[in-house]
Each structure stands twice: as C-alpha cells, then as structure tokens.
Length: 120
Image (cartoon, rainbow, N blue to C red; front, side, top):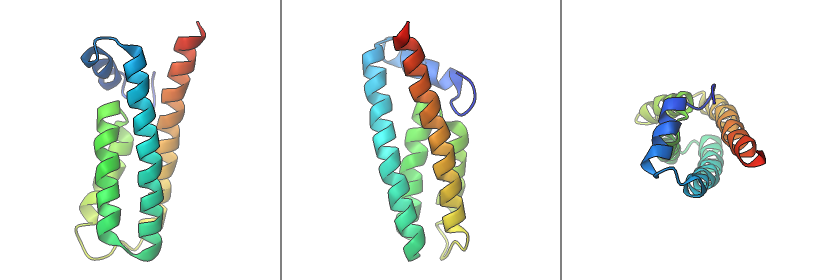
C-alpha cells in the first residue's frame, strides 16, 4: 500500500496479529464501522456547536487511525481534538468534512488491499 495508509504501521499490525489476516480483516472492519460512527458524531456535534463531543469523536477516530496506519487522518483528528479543548471551533464543519474525505481515502485503500489479497 501507499498513500493514506502507512505501510510500516500496517505491516506492524499484521505482525502483531501473527499474520492472521482474517483477524486483521476483522480489525479493519471494526475500525471502518467505528470511524463512520465517529464521523457521524462529528458532523452532528459541529452542526450543534457541541465542542466537547466533537473533541471526543476526533480523539476516538485519531486513536483507531493510528493503530491501523492512517497517520495523515490521525494528524487531522489530533489537530481538531486539541482545538476542541477551547470554547469554539468556527470552521468545525469544514474540518469535519476534510476528516471525512481523509477517512474515505483510508477506507478505500484498506478495502483495496483486501480485494487484491483475496482475489489472487
């Protein structure tokens, strides 16, 4: 892989699971489901001006993204999480949209990796 997913981090995940690709696939599926839920929370929180919820969702997505190798996405989430320690984020909707796009790219790469691996 190359792009939204850091090859070394993803390889470390595979190594940590003992090369059990079915388990890696389960971890990826869990990450994708949780990520979608966190982005839904972020959208609602940004629309409602709920900065604490926005920060918690960004934190959760950051953590999962780091584990799976989506380091650029994690950096976007970290920046939003840190800013959410303040009182307001005027560009919350735009930043949430950017995180959504980065999550989509990471998800596409993870699923493409699985398709390539299982097709052969």
